[in-house]
Structure formats: C-alpha cells, structure tokens
Image (cartoon, rainbow, N blue to C red):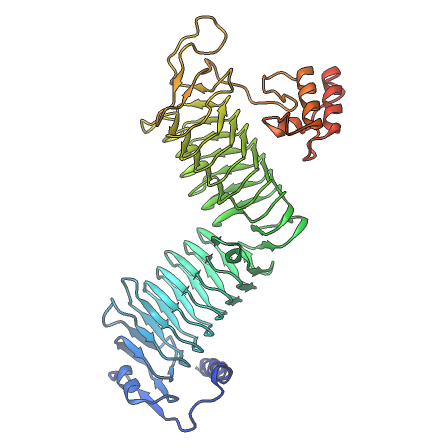
Length: 556
C-alpha cells in the first residue's frame, strides 16, 4: 500500500506542475472531502469548489460522475476503488472542467459508444494510475488539449485510449491490451507525445489516422492483429516523428520522413516512408501491421523481393510516383494486396505474386500512367481493379481464380489491356473481365487477352479467335482474343512478341535516341541490365545478347 500511495502522490505532483504550467496557481484556500463506501462521489463534487481535493475510499460506487469543477479526485487505488456506470449509456466519469486530476480508480461499465473517463473540450487535466475496462472507449479525449494520461491500465474495451480532434497531449507508460478494436487510437489529433506505452493483444495496437506532427518514442507493440497503422489524406497527416526505439513484435519501426538515398535495414518490423526519394526496401518479411510497406508522397524508389502477409494492406502507395514494385510476394492480407491511391503515377509493378488477399489483389484508384505487367494474381476477391484511373498499361499478367472479376475497370479511360491470361475468375458467377462504361483498349491492335470462358473459334489456326470477346459493363470489346494462354514477357522482348531478336534491338535503340517519338510499352523489358534506367548500355547488352545469348545474359 505504501508503494501505491507513493505512486499516487507522485502523479499528483505531476498534475500540480502541469496546473502551474497551464494557469500558474490554484486557489489559495482549498478543502478536502472524503467519500466512503455507500456514499456518493457526485454529491461530494456538487458540494466542493474549484481547487478542492476529494479522497474516495475502498468500495464499489455505482454512478455516473459529472466533473464540472477544477478538482482533484484521488481513489485509494484501482485495486480497491471501483466506479461502475449506473447508466451504461452514459460515461462513467465525464470531465468538462479544466485542471482536473483523476487517479486511483477502477472504471467500468460504459457501453453504446460511451467512455470510462471522458474529457470533453478541456485542458490541463491529469488522468493517472487508473484501470479501465468493459467500456466502449476506456479513456476518451474529445477536442481536448494539453492533458496527461500516465500509468493507466486499459483493457477489454472496444477502444483503449481514444483521441479525437485533440492536440498537445502526453500519453506515458500506459498499458493497453485485449481491446476489440484499437489499443491507442489518434483520430484527427496532432502534436501529441506517446512515450513508453505498451499495446498488445488488440485488433490494432497503435493507430494514427489523419493525425500529424505526433511524436512516438519507446512504445512497445506486440501480438495485435495489426500492430501499427498510419492513414491520412494530406502530407501533413503522415508527417510524424517515430524513431526506431518503437517496436512491433520485437522489431524496430522504420518511419522515415524527408529521407534520400537510403535502404531500409533488414531488421524492420514496420516500414513507412514519407516525403522521401530514392529509397530502397528489399529482402524483408513484413507482417501484422496496417500496411506491410507504406509509401506516402515518395518518389523514385524501389520495393523488391519483400514478403508481406497478414497485414490490412500489403503494399500501400499514396501520392507516390516513379516507384518500382517488383518480385514481391503479397498474400493473405485482410484488405488489399497492392494499393495505388491518390495520384500515384508512373509506377511499375512487375513480377509480383499476389494471392489470397481478402479484397483485391492489385487495386488502383485515382492514379494514372502506371504499368502493371507480368504479375501473377491468384485467388483474391478481385484480381486487378482500376477506379478513376487513366492511361495505364496492363499486360502479360495472369489473373486466376478470383471470387469476382479478373480485371475490373470503372470510370477509367484510355487504358491498354492486352496479353493477359484471365482464367476462371467467375466463382461468384461474375466475369473474367468487366469495364463499366469506359473507353479502353482491350487488345494491342493485333492480339488481345486469353479468356478461359471464350467460346469462339480459330478457323485459320493463327491463335486468335475469329469472334470478338465483348467486355461486360459497357461497349468495350477485345477484337483479337487469344485461343491459348500467353507466356510472360521476357527481358529484352521490347516489342512483346515473345522473341528476343534484332527487331527488339532496333526498337530499343530508337527509344534511347528519342523516347517521346519511340516509346516502349514495358520499360522493364528494355532495362536489360536492370540498373533502373534505359540507355545505350542496354542497347549494347541487348545487341550482344542477340548475337551470343550464352555469353551475354540479361538481368533479372
């Protein structure tokens, strides 16, 4: 008991110092009140004045407590003082006054979106050494700032600690566990500091949504469905200071902002890259987070040979351009496999294996001029989907066994889709392909895609069906459907005809001389030395390879 009293006194000292910081001093004359089992905490508050202290002694108090005065509430300890909601559709403690201190309570029983301890529009409060459980939101800060949450134990609620539109708060040494939704959740909340918190065994450990300029140091996150999660709209909502002292499942979080020319170390547990350029993420296994790899406002970077599984999204690119995503294994993620969103343009996705994701294997939204080629997309809800995305190229992909559609387009135009294998993507009686009122090209002008449900004939035996394949959803049509599945495109096969020969050398030479007048459809195929650029070095290597393929091999 002596240790507990010491801890409570220490928390009160912190609260007092914070009070001085906020307004300078408390009223000179203050009273002490004592509440024992069978009496009412609310009655004591009603009788108290600003600056008073109320001590609550062991017992179970069944009431909903409104704290509308600048007072200090001290329970004898969360192990001996329980406050349970009389009305579970109301908060247990509702704090509407600044400079309130609450410590030493077990708080329980608020349901229907209500909180154990609710701070509404207040400043400079101190909530410490409480236990809260069996609530919708254990501790909830709503439009509140400059408060401290210290050494609270929060468990078995929907949300553990929940901040909504709340700024400049300090969360230190709190333990959150076994919550059905989020352990620590920041929503539209900025400039908060989270240090030395432990978040475990919840759906999400720590989640930052639309929340920027926060500082996270020495937080330990483990055994949640999704340990760490960051979501936002603008760059500012992704700009947080999160150093490698934060850990997920014993591995450091690498959350880089404003970096250049760096490679993520191989011990990463979470990877987030913001407003950076020339970053490489390779040879990692990343699982159990909101995103396996997050790129936000990042350019000219690479994600390669990474295994991402068991995340909400596997690989997530937001407003990120000129990135190569290749040779990754993306599987069993709860939402999307690879996600390009919010003007993520001029990216190349090649040779990825994307399988068994709950929603789409590859999903692109409001993003243009991307190349999706030579990927294997199997057993997802939908294979490859584009929404409001234009001028993209989808070629040489194999999309198989999707529950709904193989390739799905909506509100998307001027995309080129050809030489893809679309096989048995109709498990829910949908279609291999779907194009909702778009103007897109479903063939190259000479050859189209392979559809496992195509029933046309090939009377001249050239491998192209005589009858066009109508694409459901609008007026699009594949004029030259293939009779057999197409092989993946190879390095050096610049024209995409499955052969590597002198015509490819000429085509690549013309492209190097004038890339605008002589574009190549799949840049990856022309980068034969795999150095990330196409220049005369590639032309010379390809020429030598055509003359002596054994001596002059091509890059992977």
